[in-house]
Amino acid sequence: MAPILVYFAVDQKMGFAQPMMIGTAGCLVVPVNAVFLGPETKGKVLTAGIEAP
Image 1 (cartoon, rainbow, N blue to C red):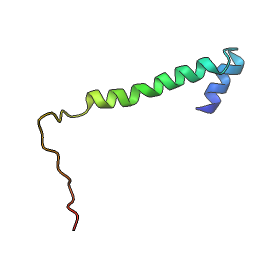
Image 2: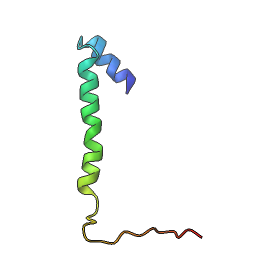
Image 3: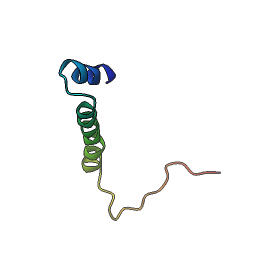
Image 4: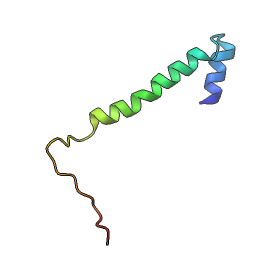
């Protein structure tokens, strides 16, 4: 990720703020999609798969 940020910052003359903002916003898409595409747990009783002794 760092070489990509440096490329945009230096070669494209954008500075470091814009590439970091775009990279951060892009990385936020992954967990948001995981939440929306995950299984629905509303109304289910969630139990542990392993019981402690």
